[in-house]
Amino acid sequence: MAGLDFEKPIVELEKKIQELKHFISDKKIDLSSEVRKLEDKLDHLKKDTYTSLSPWQRVQIARHPQRPYTLDYINLLMTDFLEAHGDRLFADDKAIISGFARLDKQKIIVIGHQKGRDTKENLKRNFGCAHPEGYRKAIRMMHLAEEFNLPVVIFIDTPGAYPGIGAEERGQSQAIATNLREMALVATPIISVVIGEGGSGGALGVGVADRVYVLENSYYSVISPEGCAAILWKNGSKAPEAAAVLKLTGEDLIKLKVIDGIIPEPLGGAHSSIEETAHNIKEVLTREFKELTALKKEELLKLRYKKFRSMGIVA
Image (cartoon, rainbow, N blue to C red; front, side, top):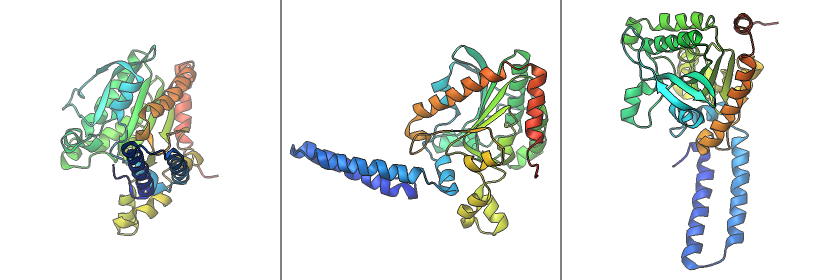
């Protein structure tokens, strides 16, 4: 992998270490001390790089082509996954995955945006941009969760809802608005985790939850940095500046009280150790479900309402 622009020094040093190891192996020469020095240098370089990322660099990691998607986490975290299809009105939107599963012994319903790994799959998944039927499928599953008293896990990873003519004709904005209203009333615990991109109403359409978390290198924003730059400066190349002013990183979102917590990622991003990232997510889900399932339904809904009504209040 070539890596992102700011990762090039890391990639070059990793390549140098590999070349030295091959040279040692071929020539039967002991240069282990040199290898250790380079590996120590690499560790420090990674720590310096990934602990001082700019908002734009975090956006780039959130979009990394090897970043884990919803199905990756379902396969790692859950068992007995049974996918459910369709909105019972129009079609099955493959940009949103939904179904029944188990998180250890806990029966749950899981929902999430799904992107593709190649062009063919991305066309099938519409690059993770859901149509109205995707949001209707999601809320249908949440109503099933309420009926069967099952908690809900939602993985958010979308640049935004699909803005095409067909989606608008079938009521895209109404579908999202309906979800906002209905999710406020679903009487079962809901936890959402932004695992990559959390863009605009496309993310919020499945984001009204009792607990909202973001992975360390994910972003959650009212608009993409490129879209913001095009509006404010009429110049998409100003996206790095837009990322900074949008306050879209976990640290900013915590200060604004938009989210409940940040889930740490390994150095290099979630794709550098999917298992470690999945473990960190599972710890949060297990802890939060234990607390939320102990609440009476009336109290759960009251707290959810209060959580979102208090956002945006300026003292």
